[in-house]
Length: 150
Image (tube, rainbow, N blue to C red; front, side, top):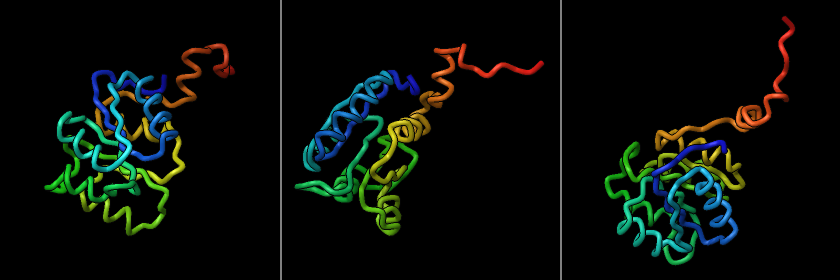
């Protein structure tokens, strides 16, 4: 397991069921408690009721965009405080990233992104432990470690 996030609560807000299930499985395998919402209105409601440690938030969704959700859950636009927000998007425009960060997003990842990158950024924000995949593999398969030439 490349990440350890035991005891952390994470809300994933995305309208794509494949992303919801894939990201959910990654965080659950790291030990996090995971909740999901499939549109912006549900995301705002759940964020306000459940007070998660981290919100993984899609930018483009029905009913309420990620930007509008961010305005509701981080009205002071502060970064570096709970709930931390990682915005995910297929939109590669730099101005969208700047606007998301202006609204309080702590991180911004373009789709497609690797689960390892998402877990690494989440660990950085939440104080969890991230183990790079190569190191995790070698811990479980020490015979694959290169031998020294001493």
